[in-house]
Every structure is written in structure tokens, then in C-alpha cells.
Image (cartoon, rainbow, N blue to C red; front, side, top):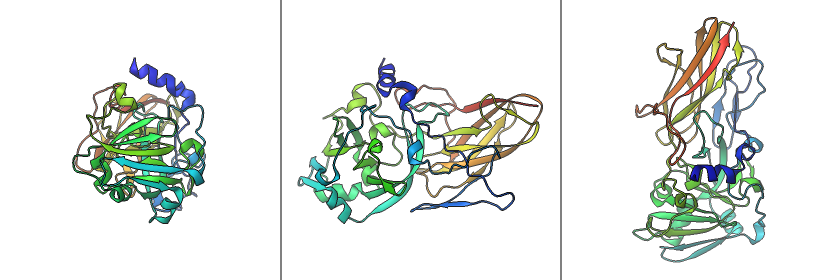
Amino acid sequence: MEKQTRRQLFGGAAATVGAVALYQLLAGGNGPQTVTSTSSTVPLIKLDEGLAPQSFITPTEDFFRIDTAYPSIPELAKDSWQLKIHGMVDSEVTLSFADLEAMPQMSDTITLACVSNEVGGNEIGNAVWGGVSLADVLRMAGVQSGAEQLVSRSSDGWTCGTPVDAVMDGRNAMLVTTMNGEPLTPKHGFPVRMIVPGLFGYVSATKWLVDLELTTWDAFDPYWVVRGWTPEGPVLSSSRIDLPRPAGKVKAGALTAGGFAWAPRAGVGKVQVRLNDGQWQDAEIVESHSGDAWAQWRADIEVAVGEQLLTVRVIDANGVEQVEAEQGTFPSGATGLHSVKFSAA
């Protein structure tokens, strides 16, 4: 029931803006092209002459949107925006947008996923996020011993609980003001939102942020935890096939398959594909710059005439394989392997 209610609040499929980032076409035989962001240079892959050119970075206008404010969009003025940091702190702090602008700025390419993303689904995207260190902001207030949960609140009253350890352990947790080099758009949280790498959005990615409270796990249950979803929400390693397409038709013989894989925090070690009941074979990985961003993969395979089934899996940099057992999204994220059926003639 909790899951169904959540889907209804999201407005079903209409609430999911496609996050399918495919691949940049290359000039024939000239080798990989690159796209430069503020934080990395990412090689891209040629997969199919019929594809429109799209990049490793999900365009802002295509990035998925899931929130309880849907379909409305809170309207906040940058000049009057304030963020209060309180609770288990040495001293309460209130920051303006100008205060954030005066702080050292940072950016990083980070993959953001929703816990309701099915295996192989599109409720995931990769963007260059910019802003200030969330850990630095908390240090301004002084985090007291025993503080376990960072409760964040949006202007529409939505609440989110984030492990304090995940904010303070050195990962690039941010108060975000820019996305893909431009100011946040209203639907993605203008003027300020949170991003904490390695955690599903429901425990890390508050939009229209106005309040931060340091507390304990026992003291408060945020919005989705009350509805039965797990409190800490680490993103699960997974992988996706983007080509060939489901029910697609290809020529028999040599085929280049491709897609994305992610293994948050540890990073992608290997991606492997299996055609029908054959052996797993290693795919080529186009490395991202850290474990906090997804990686592209490609694999050259030989297909015979007839119906085909292609499956993919990821193995993280610590040697841990993607979970094959199938589980639905509730209460902690979907597991299982993504497969695509297609035919060759």
C-alpha cells in the first residue's frame, strides 16, 4: 500500500521525465570524442548511427523529477531565501544565498537515483552539481556528539533524513546552487537543494531547502520512513542496457551493445554481458572520474538469426557482484539483473 500511495503522489509515469542518456555519435573512425564539464572530461562511445547525439551528462531538461510537490513547483526568491541550521549544534546558524556565494565553491559529477527506480529504469540521471560543502556548513554550527541524523526540510514541508556520517566522511555532499553549469531550475530545487553522493534521493536530495536540523534516528522519522521505506537508503549497484532496444530488430552478426553501470562509493570494477545462456564476457568500460558517477559500457557481440536475450551485470571495484536475486523497489531499492529481448535477421 505504501508503494502504491507513493506512485500515486508521483503522478505515475507522467511524473518521470526521461533520464535516458544514450551516446554521442563519433565522426567515423576518428576515435573517442570528449565532453568537458567543470569537473571532468568524459569519453563517449559510438553505438548506433541511428541515435541522436546525447551525452554522458544527463541534460537538465531531461533529468527525472520526483517529489511530493508535483505537479506544482514551489517558487522561492533567491534574495529572501534563508537556511536555518539548528538542533544538536553548538550554535544555531542562519545563512542567506549571499552567504553561500561568499563561501568556497565546488562542483562534482554525481549520479542521482530514486529508490523507486526499477532495474533498468530511467529514474536516474548524471549531472554536474555545483555549490558549497555541506560538511563545511555543518561545521560552522558545530555538530554535537551523538548527532546521527540530519533532517532537512523543503519549503513545501517535505522532510528527509540523512546519516550525519555520510555528510561528514569526506564525500562531496553539497548545498547545490547550480546544475550542469547553470543556476538550478525551479523544478530541480531553485535556489538551493541538497546532494549527498551514494544515497537514494529520498534520504539525500531535498529540493527547495530551507531548514537543517541535527538530531538522532530515534527522535524523528522523515516523510518516507513513516511510510515504511528504510531510513538510510544507500544506492545499490546496478546496470542497464540501452542498446539494443527492447523488442528491437538488428542484423545478425557483429553487434555493439551498450549502456550504463553504477557502483556507488566503491566505483565500477567490471561490467559483463551474457547473450542467451552463454558465458559472461567483459565489456569495455568508459571510466567516469569517481565512484559517485555512473560509467558507460560497450560490448561487441556476435548474434545469430533469431530471438536473443542480452543480460548485463556490474562488479564493483571491491569485487562485489551486483545482486541477481529479484526484489521490488520497496522498501530499500530494486535488485536483479537487467535483460533485453531482441531479434536478429
